[in-house]
Image 1: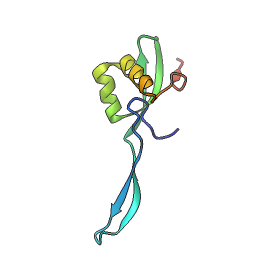
Image 2: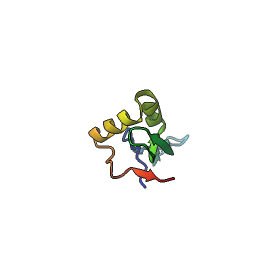
Image 3: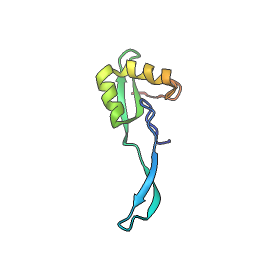
Image 4: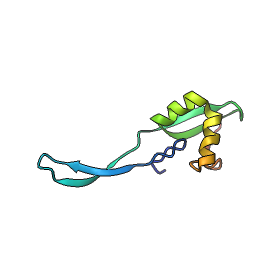
Length: 87
């Protein structure tokens, strides 16, 4: 699985390590990702998402269903990519 938030679309950024002598070498700034279980009330099922910390705040603010619809509209997620958990 790639390191992309399924709600906000955040990916890794590139930058430089800067030493004391100001030499620069390339590095990556990774996304703060979590694999989280959510209960999707409208569909009555549990799903598994890769979500960044900012994505968690978005879900808490506008709700899971609205966040998923917003992510689908922006092209960050496809409903076929959502992993459904069965209990």
